[in-house]
Length: 219
Image (tube, rainbow, N blue to C red; front, side, top):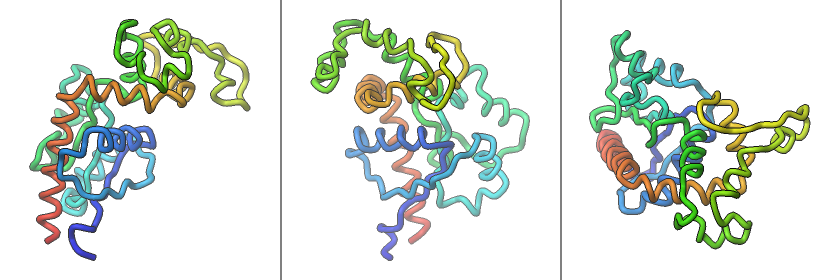
């Protein structure tokens, strides 16, 4: 197989991270020279991923490791930042000289998307999206309504429990909300990416350079 046809392997935390990554690529990645990707279907904690890379960086030099946005070392309480302060590490973060990238944002994918749509104004362009208009989501009132639901609507086999989503809740609640709004998430993320263009472009630019380095080493 020609070198250019060999996909770059992606290690990520879970299915949601891979969904987010794919949206970044399909919506904003066209202007970057990106290879094919082989996104490994795994579910691992961030510590497992980081420990794998740190223990044997040479063995994983042809992989790209992705961590969720809440690991950003710019966050005051970043668990990754604490890890790096307390351990000898063999990697850099968001650097073209390494292969560990943090997805754009500052919170988990689910919470970040919740915060985004819940802080829009009624005149935001998102509410003019024809796909949302078809579903009757035409202003922030409809977004707020999505913050109240029964968990049975997400997991039909579970017991009934009213869920109310707001700030400062545990990650499980935002994951429930994310599943509850499954019919809307692809529309919501399109506007999130547009409104976070600087972060997204910085991420994709570094990703492109890392992939070029991997391809060069393969050749």
